[in-house]
Amino acid sequence: MLRIETDQVKCPPLLKWPGGKRNLLNVILPLTPTSFSRYFEPFVGGGALFFALQPKKAYLSDKNSELTHAYSQVRDRPGAVIRELRKLRNTKKSYYIVRSTVPRSDAARAARLIYLVTLAFNGIYRVNLKGEFNVPYGYKTHVDPCDEERISRASDLLKRAVIRDQDFEEALSTATRGDLVYLDPPYTVAHGNNGFIKYNAKIFSWEDQVRLAHVAKKLAGKGCTVIVSNADHFSIRNLYTGFATATLERNSVIAASSDFRSRVTECVFYAGARTDVE
Ligand SMILES: C[S@@+](CC[C@H](N)C(=O)[O-])C[C@H]1O[C@@H](n2cnc3c(N)ncnc32)[C@H](O)[C@@H]1O
Image 1 (cartoon, rainbow, N blue to C red):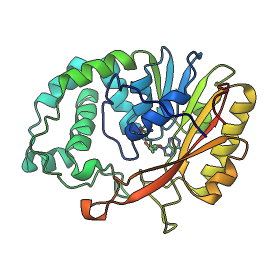
Image 2: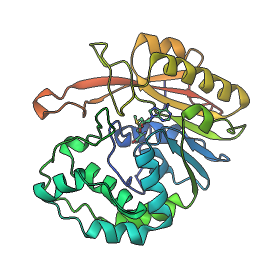
Image 3: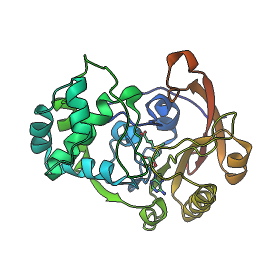
Image 4: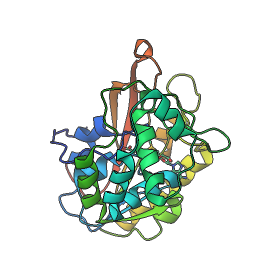
């Protein structure tokens, strides 16, 4: 059994991201070692664990280049991103104009992503086959898409991070003994119906899941602490034999309507130095 303690979230993520792990933090945070060299999060998404853990040195990456671009801009030019965001109104008309517009500057491109993800229906990130964001307006009229304090705090934390747009395997090629690695891939096995959950234009394939488990085992063998969150499915469990496993239950937040939200289970796999984790 995994020992579960609760902790305070010190810094909320910059963005709400599909598959975000804020609701698993009370399970994942206690698994992190009290000291480690560097922190690797190669499926960073909303980076819930990074923002909560606040590591001194981090390597954050994702295959979604719009997302990593936004993080780099918030880290390097928070003032410019805030100025661009202030120009954008939270109305349905403005949302569709922003959605269909190609930004002219790097800061405007970052502001556009933050604006769209904040105001999109159910916080969904989805692009069509041409890579165009196509989620409808979410009618969150009370939300200010320009949360300056959140952007400034995120900027300060992101200054500790190397941010890259790359595949997880490349991102992890330099991880070594003493490093902490958190892996939160897209869940390719949907609960109950064997469907696929898309977070991006491309699906994370079964071959990717196998490749990831292979990399996770290699890193654990090198002496990294490795924590993986993934779908609760026998095919996934079979990939992580030798890791401590916890099964967790939570409300599904992917469903489009609250009427269809249900309890789903997922797994956390752990390999590392903590002796209180079986
Ligand atoms: C479940 S989300 C991560 C959620 C994140 N932990 C959070 O708290 O918000 C999965 C992320 O993996 C990214 N991704 C998909 N395939 C990838 C790959 N081959 N390498 C790196 N990132 C990938 C997606 O773009 C998405 O942002």
